[in-house]
Length: 416
Image 1 (cartoon, rainbow, N blue to C red):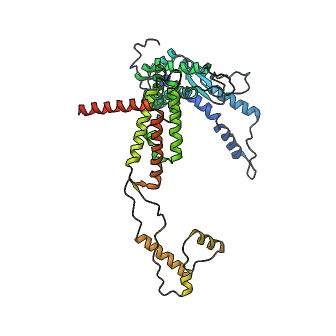
Image 2 (cartoon, one colour; image 1 turned 30 degrees about the horizontal axis):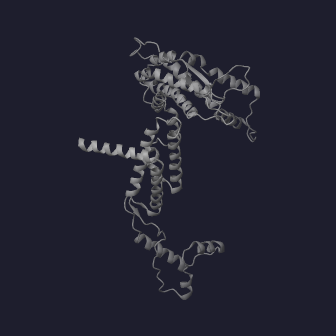
Image 3 (tube, rainbow, N blue to C red; image 1 turned 120 degrees about the vertical axis):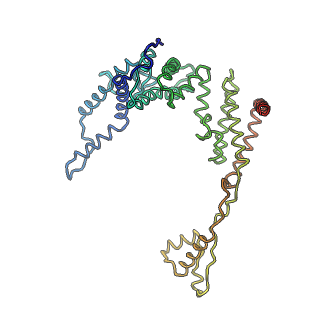
């Protein structure tokens, strides 16, 4: 990266910043055109321009008009400006990662584009020149975040590495993986400029920071394996510690079984993953949190879900009317619906009395924070089985984990 001097703390440059905003916006406009919005607009145009009393027959756009519209959209792309800023457009539908080709000889245009930083020096200069006015700040931050998001998407697409289905070996990384790794290298080089210019608050920046740290330590492959399975999400994002709060036993069994399989594969590789110990400790703590929540969850019996039976005042009703007070069951309601029978006065009165009784005598409310026993008990049984599997599959690791946990608790007590 080039040395930056006297460029920090410079006055806002609205003109250059607007060029950046417009250049990023031109790619967004292109993608919108090719992801259905353009086609929808053409269809709408055909409906609007149909004569009175005429039926729209569909988009009335000739092939030449379509080609002209396409050419106009391509011309709107500010490819040269992006190049000057260190950014290159790539075709998302191409095999691997290929630079977008807009040459006249190419019959098919890219259906959608991503912007990737390809020249670190130029983009670093761009970052230091991005000193937006207050009105431009939000759009500028979104533009930078969009570029970082493209790199995030690329990492997630190619990590963990999956061999192509039609490849016999597919073991060695392909050219696309080289491009992805270059994005991670560039981010590490550009990080000081991103922080200095105030572009370090987006979700994309934070995600890419984590990826580059894992990449530098050689654990990105395993980290992405765990992330792809949803094992790294916290409780607020339905991670492993929260699965029990919204799951049935089968779901819980499948999720933790796949988790065990991943841990075993990391541990049993020819070269054990350096990420295994960290992930094991995290997931074991999540499991303990989930089990503790289940073990202490307050329950109540909600198996008696039938509505309370209101006493029916039969005084004053003759024998025929008493017989007409039919119990409210699904079978009886279905029969009445089939026969299209209207309720008698006796039946109406019985139902009215029943409703009044239920209003005056509502069922007791469950304790605050309590959960139905029919939901909690099967989950507890499944978690007990999973706890046994933890012990059986990871005997040594569990012993080390519990020992370290006890030492940590002892240190905490001494500090108190």
